[in-house]
Length: 293
Image 1: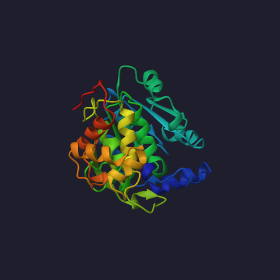
Image 2: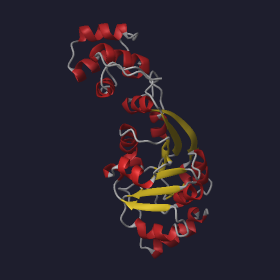
Image 3: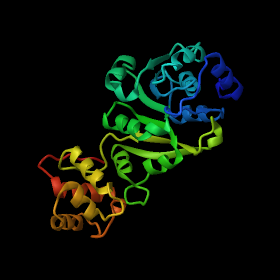
């Protein structure tokens, strides 16, 4: 099961298929045989569940998922890889490879057509260059999935899982916390890959919330507009960043920050999720209320 992590097997496949790694696609294949089994186990795959994988590469994680899950749909952008995967996934009749750009796939339709009656998980070794766009697409589309278990650059993992009110928090962190309960599962050193990247990685799991953690009295887009504005100029105070980003005079903003329980000179990363939600309600609140826990 783990032979696809063997550097000799990888090089043999590269030679036979005339395959060269694409830096543009962020291709680094795992050579540590323990990583993919651990990822597949941690994601919670079993025979009652379907799994969406993004960027299967040579299929080392795909095979581990297929051995556990009821069905796996692997979405691969590189047109050269389906032929390789046809060989490496031989014997697994519960795997479907879709050659497509994940950013353009209608995932609601894919889930309806491929996973009818099944709980769905996402598990993937995400290319560094597209980590945040893929995660945000998966979260913002509010897919009927249980969780996302993904490997990302370690620095990105720390940022994605940062809690609002802490220094590492950014706009993506706040959005991830709104949609999910994130946690870092384990680190993956750079020497676990071929070619060896310049940075270490980490596997994270985002457990999708059934309801958001804050009660908004306005549309979600207003909350994310506020978050984007607050973090757009990190060197400035939240007051100055929001005034510029939202085109709102400082006086009412200062009052709203005070009412939300934030210090007048607080920076965006010092605002908790509850304070961001309260601020949004004070600035944009309407009669429509969405309550979450």
